[in-house]
Length: 71
Image (cartoon, rainbow, N blue to C red; front, side, top):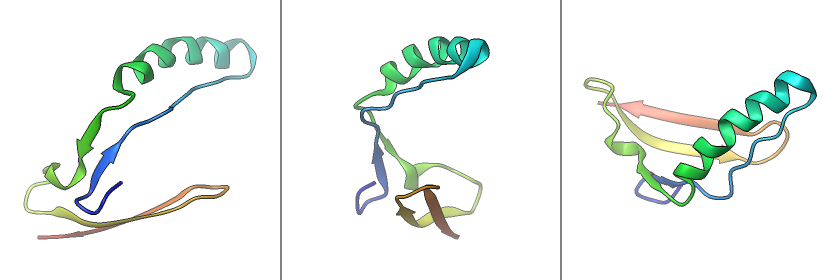
């Protein structure tokens, strides 16, 4: 996510465990490949009069994402 609140998707993968996890992974992997490398303007997403103003991400286990919204 850059300063203009545009998110670029890169190197997404999906793995699963067990029969259902493997099946879900096989369904999701081609979809993830389609969006790999694309950029999405998060600030342009419309929620009525409310807009995304700030986004913070904290890498770790778990990944934490905090968003601030305003009009």
